[in-house]
Amino acid sequence: MILTTAVSDDKEGNKKVEKRQEENHVFDIKNLNLWYGHDHALKNINFTIPEKNVTAIIGPSGCGKSTFIKTMNRMVEMVPTVRIAGDILYRDRSIFDPKFRVENLRTKVGMVFQKPNPFPKSIYENIVYGPRIHGIREKKLLDEIVEKSLLGAAIWEEVKDRLHENAYGLSGGQQQRICIARCLAIEPDVILMDEPTSALDPISTLKVEELVQELKNDFSISIVTHNMQQAARISDKTAFFLNGELVEYTNTNDLFSTPKDKRTEDYITGRFG
Image (cartoon, rainbow, N blue to C red):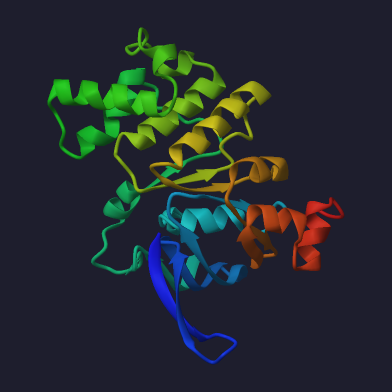
């Protein structure tokens, strides 16, 4: 949080100074538009994403949720027909600045995907993959990173005696937490999650949700979810997308209890979607 001051007049006309808290932002999205060929997938998106919060992105299938989150670390540009206008500032720096290397951005802004996607390697090798790319070779340091990352992903106790077994031998829920640990190993600032529990059973989903709540103490998290109950449970702020537009964005409790736009109300009450 940062403190700002505001000056106003009281009833007697005297000046009074108020101190107000404002959120620090990790992302500032400005007039963002995106096309797949001729398809206008994101339309004039404007909002800010606060640090050390969970921001949920909800909306019906095809509304632009996953496209948006993949734009935040420039993964969407791997699609050849993509064209982007507008800007995204990450801590006041444009992510499209030619001097801002994509590799550096993706180190700061990690990604966890819809389906668990561990590498066909041991648990240990999955976790040290990123640190090794960044030049870390000392085994003692790598061992420490593995333990710290697996502890951070709340799976150390389950796998500490299986580190050199193939990650494919784990359950789906465990694999997803390995993928989260792999993300943590490169010490990101932001974690993007694209429907990370949609392929998991209810018990594994609960573990990942509990993990997200713990991780927000140290990381800024943006999560795409088709599950409105999940958004209500774990997020601090929620953005509702529809047909490529940002319809409403506010505190999660306010959005679900007193939505300001009828389209939001219709969606969260099940009238469409």
